[in-house]
Image 1 (cartoon, rainbow, N blue to C red):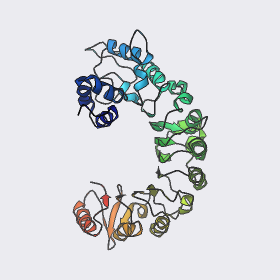
Image 2 (cartoon, rainbow, N blue to C red):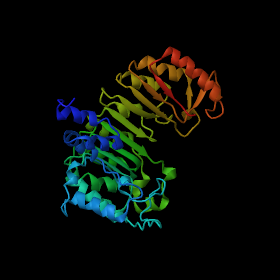
Image 3 (cartoon, one colour):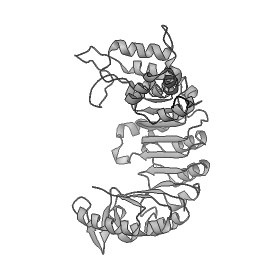
Length: 364
């Protein structure tokens, strides 16, 4: 095994967990050089780290006080992992732990993030929101960034700050979006290389009235024309998941025909019903994952047996159908998924016999 080249050992190291990778790197000098770049590509600060260890971490990424240039190894970063504390996954802006005298304010976390973003970062997840976000070196980060997951609230103004110039993002996830067509145009204009797009639109009923008064764009929803513009410009799109917005079938005309993952919100007013969905899917034969999102009325939140069984007949490559949030109808009888799981399980068994390679997901 000693004759194996370093590249092969690096491939092996890529499958190891972090603790196992530490032992791997300690085994020999050759294994150290094979695994060190992988071990330190994603910094994870221990929840009970001391102030001294935090300072040492900052010194490492700043390449000072005689330490190695740790920052060059980091390619993935989640700002939650830069947080110091043991608050059971519920980080606060500042924390003082009575046991160990810890007080790491948010600006210190973003100071570390600023340094990391100037290096070779390719994957970034942001979960903390603060005014420091706007001062981060986004233009420099987009030189290498291909994956961006924003779990914070995103608005049109935030996207305008973020996407000032074109970038090479391939995966973009907006988990809490209050954006309008203007936001979609910013994405379409700057993120031409995006292949995986996820936008979870916050319903108007869940938005702050005060915020809408101060920023009228936060009181607007995405329109069909905005979605058409987005799909027309993102020609490399393979996964298009825009959640909680009612789009008409015509909005999907410009989708890349090779798309493999799609989310559809049922809506009678937008004419997105059973018949139109079947016609739409007939034009997108490569879909492998399909998610349906219920609308606001009873008819938009009920799935029939005919509807479910027709999908795999139309989409020969389908592997997964997500129906979470829907009730089930058979022979004009409604079965609430929470109280009548026996009926759904019975249907699932018969569905599996007919379509053994398709995973059916519903509420449990």
